Image (cartoon, rainbow, N blue to C red; front, top):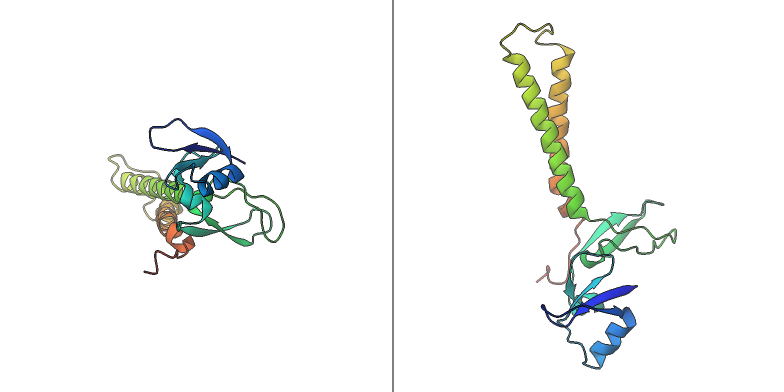
Length: 169
């Protein structure tokens, strides 16, 4: 596993292995406040968070292969961690991105259902479809399904979030 480390915010990143980071922090060659990220990640966090000296929020997710609940830290998003049960290496999902996607698609579905239903009821031309037909019920179902998906996306991160030591203070 390769990491990129910046000793300060404006410094150029240097490639490190995890053991090299631990060694340099213990030898005080690298400050604990240095920024680090894995090569496969797009966000930076502190060396203290990587080494477990500073608390990081954690969350639950399911293994794609055996459906076992696993726990990951927020800084592990995008990495492959071993499953305790099946031993395979599922990728840690970004639950916040998934939640936003569910909210957007649910909102668009509900808005589309509302738009079509309103246009059908208030169309200036006589409609060939009766007002109480299955057509209307289908779009009302689309509205309800979209609102349900929006709610699921909105509540998903809080359902999967676990408490960290800083939350209990």
